[in-house]
Length: 346
Image 1: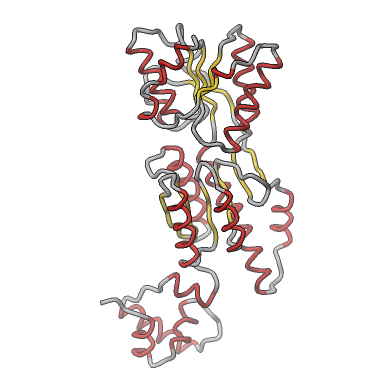
Image 2: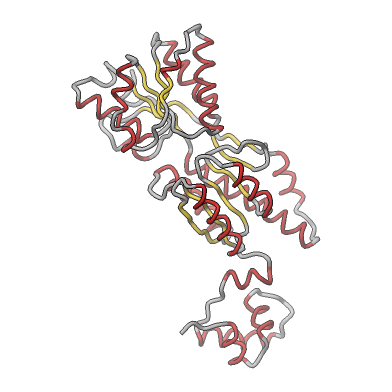
């Protein structure tokens, strides 16, 4: 049988409000009453419900996290970073898998509202206009991790995708490679647009003609990429730059199965850098993204926003140092990255 706050109040011969004060460490409780209630809580093994406590305190110490795919390696590593900071600041997390479906995503946001989460970290690939408007209306603090919004309404934590694509493309061009393919996913997102811009700008800087067919779209997972090498060979690409490790792996395996030599016949580099790249043979070259840190920084930024918003609502004094830190940060935060050459590039 589930023990409720009513059961504790009845056993301790106090009001439910008093039990709530004891649970929330409110100082306005007599010491002997506090001890009596605590003894009953221990005896009945009562576990306070975070949502019920939030009804009174307006804070559930719970963060909602929206995942695009629960099996996605990058998302899993970001969540590890989020959790490390969440544990430090005594926050619980709720994971929800949107399956890349906007309708499911809307239901997730509504569920988070009903659970009175203190904040949301969004890991989805592309935040739709309807989702963005909904999040703005409910006024729950939101941070985008590993992706970009369409404006500066939300804080986001990433790497500089445009510069990363530029640097990688430029490096291959400087070594004399001209026919470079960029493989992107199917989402018309800010992230994709910036990768394309960086790629095009690098070509322009070396006076290399841009060929539209060299941007191949629609690939994110290993399964989706089962015929990618055919598309790559049709354009006689010398280098393939992919957004995701699974796509890089699929391309490499298809090439090897056909007797190609990597990197002699085809060079491959991924812009993601999950744990997968070190599990392959040959090991896949990549742009090193600090994926764990993206999650950790996202969570820390969210705690600052939550604390400041809470203080505003209660009319309490705001931590000026924390406020100054938040104001000093750009809404779009870019963490450092580097190019790591392993065994799939020359």
